[in-house]
Length: 194
Image 1: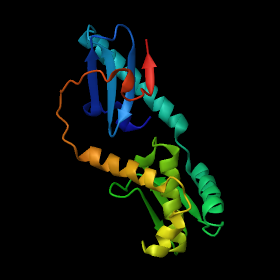
Image 2: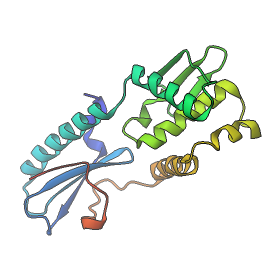
Image 3: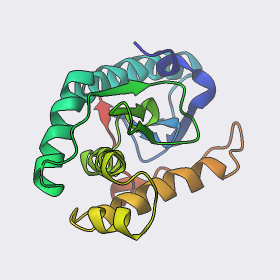
């Protein structure tokens, strides 16, 4: 289990009088939001937070592709959008990229993706992979590079998603702040129990 799964400093508990029995949790940027009934004791809250962190971590570990799956997906994307011209020698996750989503060494054919992409929507991961594959063909960010990415229909959506993640990370987080339950129109909880 990843160490951040138990990082309680990144957990925000939101109590709601409208909740009677259910507990749910979801990821919001680099935080985990746990929604609980307002009547719950502190001990029950702690127990449910631990349980929901475990449940989310288990769900995410099932969704995160390994390096072999990344290579397979890179080959599929190259075939679909780049005429099968970009052929990486290696595609892998790395944990030392905190200011980039991915990087590429064209001379070696290697692509490295930041672990921060794990758990993001598939179209976002596909975009970053395709972006790095395009660098195997065009090393800079000139017009020829961007012309390659025009073929991918979700380029702008994925770029907007990543910009939103970066912007959200810059927002001030007030420790201990309680927020109202987002209700049925709020974020779709990734895990819930009752």
